[in-house]
Each structure stands twice: as structure tokens, then as C-alpha cells.
Length: 441
Image 1 (cartoon, helix red, strand yellow):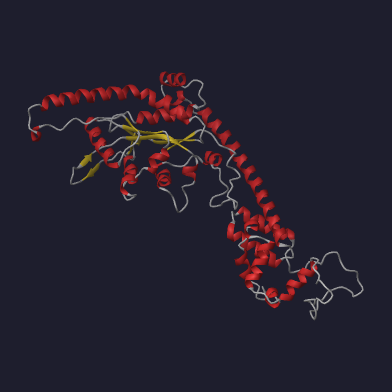
Image 2 (spheres, rainbow, N blue to C red):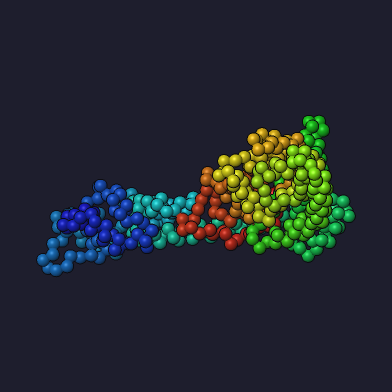
């Protein structure tokens, strides 16, 4: 800035020259901001001295040397030969020290404007050229990438070893009657699923078929009684055959029950029409309401109405979603995000009752029995820890516990908690896709 002003130019000219030398788009810096930050103690002759140091000389015999009258003090004898490179000042950072600082910055996920400021500070505190610092920064980022990728691969291998150990110790026969275990093995023969996963999916499905009020007393001494329902997510990346598992273990086996309930409702509706013939509308009984063992989508009000009917008939219900992210994303969709669908699901997990008073009709039930089963990609629960969480991420946090720590490490596909690659890339995204595991609440 000062060099341009002494030469008859202005600050705009200085910014233009800096843009020409190191464009903002190519260097990653915002040149106008860099030009206007700091430099109060740096005079114009400092600029000319550095220019001379890097080979610049005045042109023409009559051209005045900007360093005329400016004394440069060297700590060497006057007759000593000119060194090939000026010695580093003791109080200046070396290139290696700059590299360590930049490496630590990338390890912490620093990027963007913060990284640009750090590069500017290092340029002021060292004799390393800004362009060289940029190269050092890029090399440090790649080095951190390799380190994180190695850590990710190590975590994936450890998770796979743990998964195999657990899967080998827990079998279908150890959790279910032998006849049921054999039937599940036959149905899923040739599919790439562990017996532990098959058992969890089966038990969750049965939770949606048991009678309302069925409980397990986990501790008779403290009356720790819980309903036999589970909220389960099959956690895996796309392409890991999650959908065939749901089809084979849930959708197809429950189809016959769904058809029987539909036929029963058809018969009940026909009987109601017959009984209502000739009666005044006010004297007609309420029409029969359908029952559903399995639902895929709902609103909070519609679910409350269904659970009221199921409480009367002693039925449970299974909420089945091929992608649970759709369920979380639809919470309070008809109330602009101001409803209580999320809280309702939390309360349903305990099997409690519900009373809703409305002008257009009250809804109430004393007991409930709801199971949830579906697929979800690891990114939803793993990214749900930030401050600005979407509705579906909030659902993943509150309704479903995250995968085991070892599986989470294999699934994670992220740099570190709270960190990000400064260039927007994910060094571990293509590594360690992890196992097909179930997270149940």
C-alpha cells in the first residue's frame, strides 16, 4: 500500500496489482481484506528491499533507486562474499515451524477465512513467501488426510472384528425357539445378514403383533416393567441390501395378516350399512374403523385415532419405513414444525395412554403398543449432534440411540467431531462403509 502511495498511486492500484500477482480466486485469499489488514509498522522501503532481494532492479539509467538513503545493516564483514540466501533472523519462523502450525490447523479442521488469516500471519512472521506457504498448507492438508484415512481404516477393521465376534456369540437359536430360528434361516438363506441382525428385526416385528399390555418385568424387586416394543433402525450405507431384509422378514410375512384385517373390516362395514338402513342419521351407530397391523406413513392425529381403536381391540401396530429419514422428516409436517409428533413418539415408547380434547372430536386411549422398524443411513444419526439440526436428525437423536461406538467409527465417514475439510472434501467418505447393524431403543 505505502509503496504505491509513494509512487503516486493509491490503495485501489495496490489492490489491483496484488490481484494481478495473486488472484483471490486462485490463491484462496480475499485480496482486498489482506491488503487492508495489518502493516502499520511496515514502510514502503521494506517492500522495495524484499523486491531487490528477489531480483528486482530499477530500469533505465535515470531511474531512481527507491532504497537510496536506506541503510541495510548486515552482520558480516564488508569484504565477505554475498551469500546465496539471506540468513534467517532468530525471531522469524522457519519453514518447518510454519508447516507444523499449518498441519495442526488442518488437523483441527480450520479452513476458509480463518486459514487465510493464519497464512497471512505466518507470512508476516517468517521469511517464507506467501505462495510457498500456500503449497506447504496444501501438502499439510494431504498429510492429515492420509493420517485420518489410516485411522478410519484401523477403526473399520476393529469394528468388523468386534462385529464378527459378537455375531458369532449371539445366534438365532440362543434367542428364539429352535423351530423359529430354523424358519428364519430358511427364509433368509443366502442373504448377507448376521443372525444377530435377523433376530433383532424379528423381535421388533413381533413387538408390533403382540397384544396391547404385553410387558416384560426386567426386575421384580423394583417393578421395572416395560412393554415388549422396540424402536429399531437398520444402519447401513446405500447398496447394502437393507430393503430385501425388510421385505423378506416383515412385509411379505405380514401380508396375510393385513389381508385378513381388510376382509374383516369389509364384512363389518357391510353389516353396518345393513343395520343402518331406515335409521335416522342421529340414530345410526358409529361406522366401524379399520385396524392396521402395519402402517408406513401417518399424521399425529390419525395415529392417535388408530391407537384409540387398537386399544379397544387390544392390538399393537408396527410403523415400517424403508427409509426412516422420511418418518423423521414428516414429523409435524402439517403444523409448520410446531406440533408435538416427536414428543408423541417418545411417549409411545413407554406404552402409555393419551387424551386429546378437540372441538371436532376427542381422541383418547389408555394403553398403546407401537413398534418402529426401518432403514437409515449412517449420516443421519452421526450428523445429528450439531446445533442446527433438521427435524429428521432430531428424530434420529431422540428416538434411536446411535450405533455402537465401534460400528459408529466404521460408519462415520467424517473427519473428526466438529471438524471439516477446508476444501469441502471428505477423506474417509469412500472408506470403511461398515457393517449392517441394528440400533434399537
